[in-house]
Length: 348
Image (cartoon, rainbow, N blue to C red; front, side, top):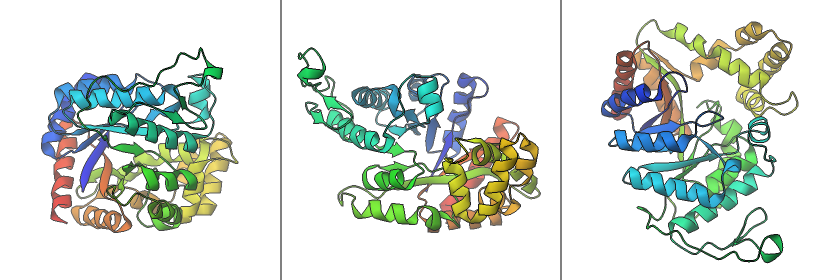
């Protein structure tokens, strides 16, 4: 199993990269670079390419509405060149708050758009002349929609690889099914080994049935916070604020994918209580309503035996790569947790 981690927005990015260099030596395999509405991810990915040797550099994630499909393909090809073939293009829809509120672009048909984008990106990387007449993207642009001077072109440079791995961050049944059919990797949220089949099993199976048999199996990234040692269980509580925010406050009361996942995971009553409390403004009570059992299942925090059991459970549920956050008050502590996790994974 590969081990991946998301770079934090907090602190100095250049200092964070120095830590990534040490984590790379300790066993980290993949670095996810976020974007949201902070600095852009590709700039940071290029900096990582120049300052690392082995890790896969993945966008985690690039929102599909802020760039054309061809630019997404060009960006991934450029980073793949700078990193000698270590790029992974992570795509996702983000949400209407960011897409319409920050980018000023309508948030429409995310699943269908990602499907078309994947097709176009792979066409670009194969150095084919881009010709795509989809519902949402027409390349070249038809004469009745522009000047009529559009010409079918292929990328000038020769990409390092004619196929760059594409990861998709998806949650809903339709988008997860599309991911299992077309993508190379899946980046879910609120994934627990115990509930994965109930939440996503049917969608993954439907997508797998339509998957090109010549494409490698879908890589699934999931895990949680990592702190390995005795007497560390209290650290699981540090995830309460974020869990309460997503389960209780993301989206509208009637449309919150995270709340739906929490419900399908066996915590329906708690999901409603958390949402009611959070939307009423009582965030602390919402945090307290998160079951200890869920925090345990959603983390890799505990003694070595506990973490080993959780990693085995994740692997048996279908996870092929761990996506984790290393806890600790210093680089040395976080690196130590990476080394411990690497040893556990390699021994399974």
